[in-house]
Image (tube, rainbow, N blue to C red; front, side, top):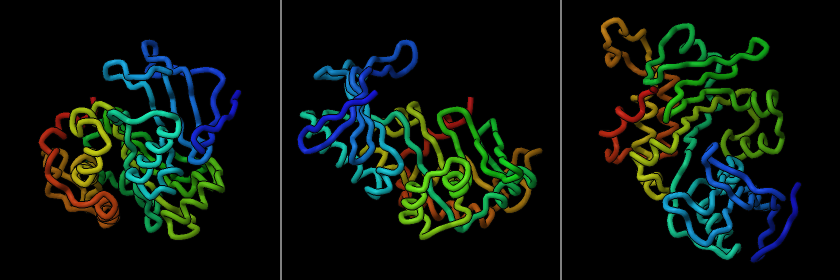
Length: 275
């Protein structure tokens, strides 16, 4: 169950039991709070300081909150304000996971599914692929199991049919889709802690500075859709051009993430290949 309280003008719901993170040897967090204004989750150990590199506070920022704030910069500033209302302040931060995503109301999931599955035009560093269908509807694809996981799926279908959520649908229509849509493809790269730590120093400021380079690498080298069948027999896939549908994805990520700064490319290929 939950109880609620107010502190510094902010209202929270608190779980009556703590939570543990990180599996069997993970750290115990005595308190789990949900900020009622933003939906942000705060897990607190109750200690005044962190233990080595294990933080005494973990925050989970939801997609709805990020959309309403307009991005990570404003959202992180709001999180810091909330922590100050609780009587704390941030000494350092590190990222445990980042989901880089862009939505494309102009693309059709069926087309991308056909290009990737039937025509076999995808070029990827991922070693695995999972396909999803529901009632003969191609709903999505997943690539990879390592430090990078790519998901391509019909977000409009998800919030309207698969997991109906009218409130989130309205926000997506307002902030991302430009109005109601029958189909809206989401391309989402999930980046895990090992990659963020080794390549981006693991903190929000470094990620914000380098996300343009990271987005360019993910959409050009880690995964892309070719316009002609790649020459896989001779291990020569570089000659194939980029399909117009994937060029749309590349342009969308570049418009959001910014231009590359050529600062992290050297370490990426070794780190981002599936195990």
